[in-house]
Length: 82
Figure 1 (cartoon, one colour):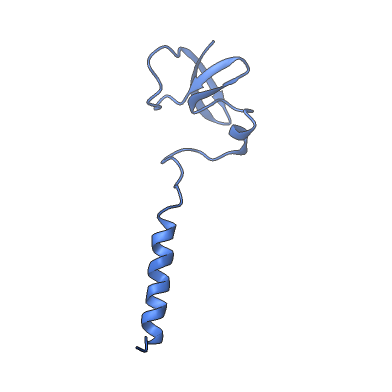
Figure 2: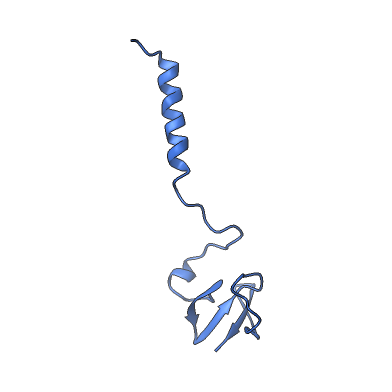
């Protein structure tokens, strides 16, 4: 059975599209900055301490109302606690 060139190309494109769905996308709305990797700026979701503070973005689902210290870093607002 002979498969046409267009069918093979279509199968390759479909395969690539399926594989690309396996690659995780970034968090919607998150700012991507290397400072998070180095913990040199506040965490968006209280996943690490920054200068001894545990911080979240004001819109983070981790913001449980216990973060009262307001901080601005890199032009972005954060709420923090000790």
